Length: 188
Length: 265
Image (cartoon, rainbow over all chains, first blue to last red):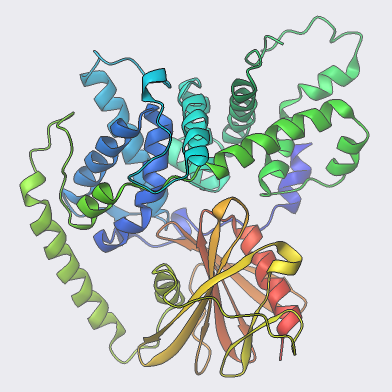
């Protein structure tokens, strides 16, 4: 069944062996801040942790020149972000994974100029994502939050494209059921 | 993987749990692909329709959650400095500014050498579009249906709101290696944003390694650079570049195709 989809799929982007190696341009990093910030928020479930995580990610990336194969800078940054997150979780084991806490609720994000409604929706959505099992969460973040193609996401997460899509399906299902207040997948 | 007590008596439930179908529905929900006949099957099957509805609502919810990075974070990154709370050791932090400055100078030098006496690349054009709008959005042209009033070298920019709901949000003009460029920005669902750049003068060389899509006599080349999806093609001998972050290439191609047909000179 999915073979039919592959046959009609539009041309994927050019990445991997077809694209020559290049050095990651530090000047391009600010272009990715917003998406990495959202990814970090969805990973950690905390806005403040997200800021730290993005800063740490850029600090690692800028520590030395990075030669990348393929044109997928954002996929690379996401991989570093994920690794940084996992490392920080290991070294700071005192902190459990953060899911939305009632005391975190704020009417609006003054720092980004969001409306109150948008801020609350974003908070709920990111909390739902942060509560997913890690593999589902990473697939959803790569595709829906960061905007990578399935192929780029598969490369960034070191798995197959079909696996990404299957995880993405399950992740979305669980997110929507969480937002709806429904039982998680497999229960209903 | 997901035991279901009714599997043996209800073949539809097996279909609903078919991972291949799940993948097709996931791809349909985010617009990345559409399997032949899938919509018809969904229309005839409330269970599949429910699955698609869940996927679509999830995509919509995530795409609607678009908080921008706080200015403090943006400034810290732009300056190459870390200004965090010390949640993790950052021994190289004091040197980041120097690293960034040195890397920037090196990059500029390399670019200057490579681009001496050269025509600009499609990637460089897309990089300009990433800077964002500098002037207000041009208005639709009542005399040319489906086009904006703005044009470069006689090549008009498309009006995408009517057909796709992509609103015109701004524009900018630049010079790249002496070539005039104009970018018009469009905003789509979920705050997606794309830049449509036309380059003045002769067409630029096609980017190497790009995927080629032929459609109604036009070659659309697609690629991704620095996390930016890029589609380039030619109109009236001019290079057009549509680029965006967070917008799937198929969507960009559709927008590019529509603009071409509706506004070709």
